[in-house]
Image 1 (cartoon, rainbow, N blue to C red):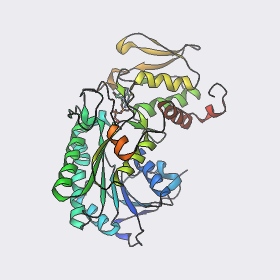
Image 2: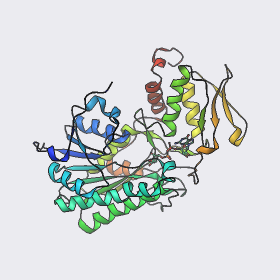
Image 3: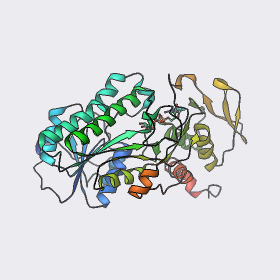
Image 4: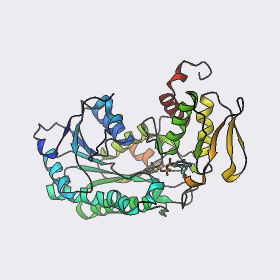
Length: 360
Ligand code: F7E
């Protein structure tokens, strides 16, 4: 199923340096793989940092494996990062490596901070040690989770109020990036990205969990999909638009911080309804609270049930971003609508719908 993976160690990097190069940490994830494709299209030489994994974690990279250079590396190891930067000397560094699951961060707060918070300091320090702090541009994957339950719409001016270990770790990293920019004149920018999804989204995030389950229902799944808080509202955009925005930030003369968001917010329940309706299911919601279920109106099959175990100790009720600054300064705007994003994900997980008339 997988192509043969060619993964270099940090010691085998005696290669010719291209005119423009980028190093992406977290290249195996949704954002890393999306950004890698985008940069390859623009003619970049792409290096991808890949933490040691005993299982193959490159499924998002299958179509570009021959075109990128994967390097064993980890943002928890300073000397490793320093040697990699010494050998690659990238023009642009995109720090996307993170423990990204907000719910999981409650059960492993220290590991979350080690990767998400300290990881960025190690990278910034490695840039200084190697002497590329003035020449290379740095992008930090900051997050709308830093806003917590601050009043919507949230912009660059909104006071932060994180309410998860994940949000706190990202806020620490955000301030370190600003501090290094001001103290050392580094071209280091924060992209404060609201939720962004797509077919490469990890299966543990709610949107992909829903679209994967939908594909399974179409193949005969019987047990209902367990979900947590159906009322949480998120500002969902498409990962492709957001990675284009990340690249645009590093093309600016001056480094700065930018919110990327659609400005529209929808509940988890609305996402479920939108995805299932594409497959011709009309869901009828019954019951209250943790006893609530959703049935298919035609067959009566229970397709979704609420599971108390999936609720978080603290929850953000609503995220809705104001990306006016990115729109006016970068000229960025999302090109893929919510409906098109849901369709992209549903078709990836339920390709049989491509041939069904009811879908068209
Ligand atoms: O949850 C609710 C859950 O895990 C969205 C990450 O990329 O975006 C993402 O963080 C909402 C939450 O994403 C389930 O409680 C209900 O309210 O898909 P999610 P997230 O936590 O918003 C931000 C911007 C990041 O930076 C993060 O790295 O959906 N929800 N039921 C559920 N969530 C999950 N995961 N699973 C459920 O069954």
